[in-house]
Length: 301
Ligand code: CDT
Image (tube, rainbow, N blue to C red):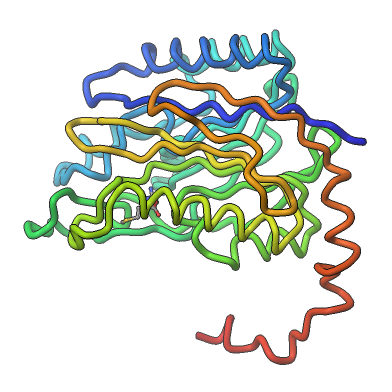
């Protein structure tokens, strides 16, 4: 057995006025709880340091840039890195990244037990729109504020497992998991901020969105025989509701833990990386069973 004790650290809402320092204090409390529960790895949500600012239409780029981190770790986040190293806990952490040459990405990093950054992922599938659309109940301006990620879907060896990362909307796309599956991924880490209502289609509500969240994570896990950990920022944020439902799914596609609140909540599950092997060597032995000669359309359109 190759056990990694994985903590899904769901976060309750972060209001617009909340400082990075206050958020990092909350994240540190979740880290301490994860340590008490025996965690080796903690997974935080997408854009874990701030409110989900793409719901706000901002024209002034200087103001937009206040939501981004120019360095990671920076002074506000360093205490979290220090505590994680003290506890020997690796992290997945989502944040808005502003690069030295002026690029904006929706990013997640992976650290090792010493808080060294071993992996970086930049969100590929950016949902939403670029301009203010008054008919919507809320804006979703990821296409305005971020560029599509330029790093693909790599995997990393960390804590004795093979890990990959994705961010929120990526989890709805089978290609996300399959590209990592083709690199033998054992554990896929995902943070998300998902509004509980569709801004245009009012019939789609909380229960359906929670269902689609489970469906996506469970299908990705089963079809690639890997663990999937999907972690929400949840609850009523700036007057807009985000789904909770953070969950850990095993390589059979079964949910083994699911959050019951919409607040700060830690789930810890011992995930055996060897449990991925049976599926990878049988029904999802890609080398033996895939028929790539019939898949060309997937990449040509
Ligand atoms: N953050 C993020 O990617 N949220 C999207 C909302 C989709 S509706 C525009 C999601 O897929 O959950």
